[in-house]
Image (tube, rainbow, N blue to C red):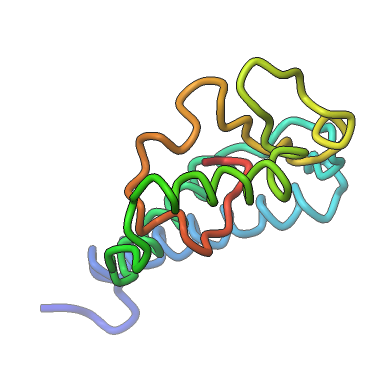
Length: 137
């Protein structure tokens, strides 16, 4: 029988969990409020920043509809797309065999160089239309 004023194991466990959550929240607040967080453009990412950004990006994209592109991938459309890319995108995202432009070198986060490394060649076509890219892609 429980006496008045006695705490149960479950109550102590709940109090411990609440205390741990409050300590973690307080630590994060102190970390940010004390100026220790690396927020300058050239600073390295905060702990878990890229992991959390990727987690949110992929969770959001998974919820979107995955429609097929409305433009057929024929030679005429691909050539037109290459022309549009060269005129509007290449200054930031590069061309095959070309060095980064001065504009791309001055951007933060650095725009992905789509012809160096994987780029977007492994992405599905639906995910490229109107997609906001991040530094963590």
